[in-house]
Image (cartoon, one colour):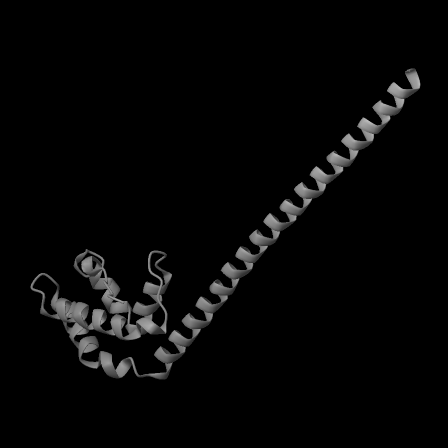
Length: 150
């Protein structure tokens, strides 16, 4: 998977506060909360490389304040070690678990939809059979009435 991380946040007016408050785990949580992004532990390396690239850009930028640059450099220097921490591993385990739950929910909804279609099909078939039986009875009754009149 080719991971594209939106770097525009780093160059917005909120970048100073954002980078001061957020560490790697909070960056990951922020990505997770973004409805446009879906990822699992399969994307871990791609995310790591995107974050490395992003923090490198911020720390080398001439338009970012020095305090933010220092924080970005500090994060950049330790990001690979940070990604090996237990908390990051647990984050991705939880993410995979949530993904599996969503996948199961989608499968259940799909199966419910299929069941509804099958039930509707069976009901339609039964209705058709009932109408055919009623028509046959009606035809028999009409023939009996015609024969009775004759």
